[in-house]
Length: 259
Image 1 (cartoon, rainbow, N blue to C red):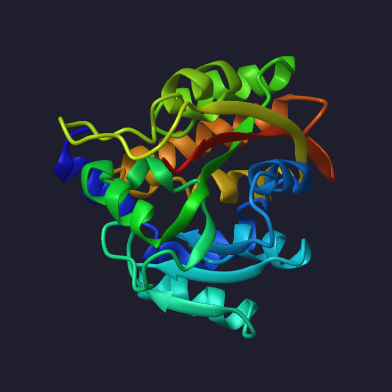
Image 2 (cartoon, one colour; image 1 turned 120 degrees about the horizontal axis):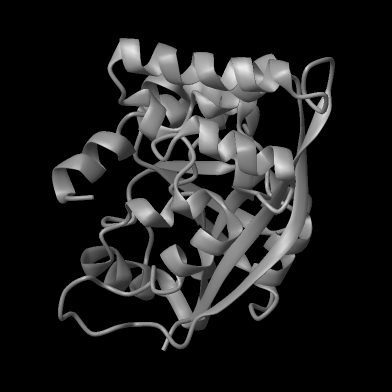
């Protein structure tokens, strides 16, 4: 994905902020705890915080959280749902915090949008020495047969390589590194996955997939066709045709330490 295409995708969420807040999943608490474990007394920055899905989990774990989000509509949803959290307008490339002011920087389904040539030094600046940078991603567990079928029917724009466990590992292993010759600011990466799930109906799962960037930027006719295929597939499966079900997921974590 080139720079213009990444900008188009990353800026697509604001128009769907309310749907994002309603339908996107939270993160497995065990995954968030693992991301934080090396950091003592964590002052945590949730970077690219969106509508606060990861922020809420951090609050539940007792962390002192600051949320930073570039999109005003997403930030409005975060402030509405989490009014006691300090939430600031900013980006990974321009973080509105002082030097060495946090012990950990976490990013939920956001690090792939960062320009790490600029964001890497900026994240390193706000981290205390030895601080943690961790990216978290919710992925569909395609070891479950019907979930693998859903991924195939959805197409790569809706369920891409990063959205299933094997692809996630390959796609995120060097996500903390700049794409240019800029020196890396972080140590060796660790990756781990944690079981997770989300209660859905067929309609709410279609609505969840509709908040993915690849779907949001589709031409209207293509978007309708894609969501129609997904809806028909879910109606055809005994696991998803009637009532509520659990979408089998994993929360994957990439964790590195500031050098």
